[in-house]
Image 1: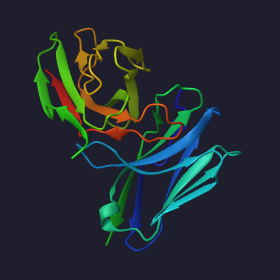
Image 2: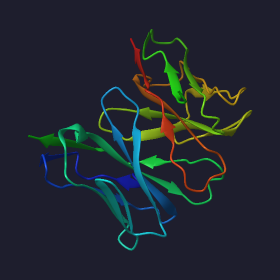
Image 3: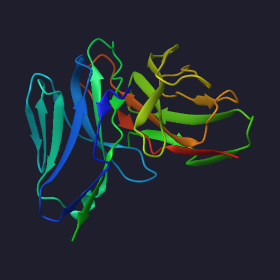
Image 4: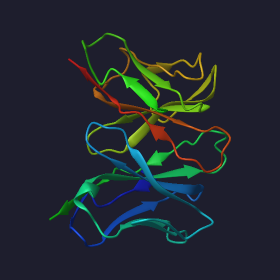
Length: 115
Length: 114
């Protein structure tokens, strides 16, 4: 049962335009959401996060939006740059996992930013 | 520099052999994790440890074993009981006790069993 879903395996966007990556989740116990960026044969790097008490978090060109009622979050990248081309993973953490930040990951969306 | 070191980056083993993947961190993090990534799939949690000498199974622990004898180290053994061991393995760590914290990942080990 896929609790975190990224339904678009790939996305192509022109340089300078907005990239919107989407993520849906089914577990209502998730209360902390993260986006990671991953290049081939490397470990994921943390991009941005949002807790369930907020509906928006912004960090430079990256903004994450959370719609709890729809169990949906999205990552906006504005403006998109060629260096943003990578696989983006959405991840979620449930309440009450003790001290461990156990994360459940989506399957990823491959973003390609074209010139 | 602080970080997580996984070694080796590439590993080849014959079918039926056990193999141990190394993970060391100098971030002073309490919690450590092992994930597995397969093509077209997300990262799946194998084992995690919240503190030294303690660890719990993740979603796909069968065929794997771990130890946590030191805070800095969390090695993963892929045993011959693991049916599909060929994958990209990622180790991560996070600050223990914090409600909202991200996990930091190593560079990964690609294991190929032939």
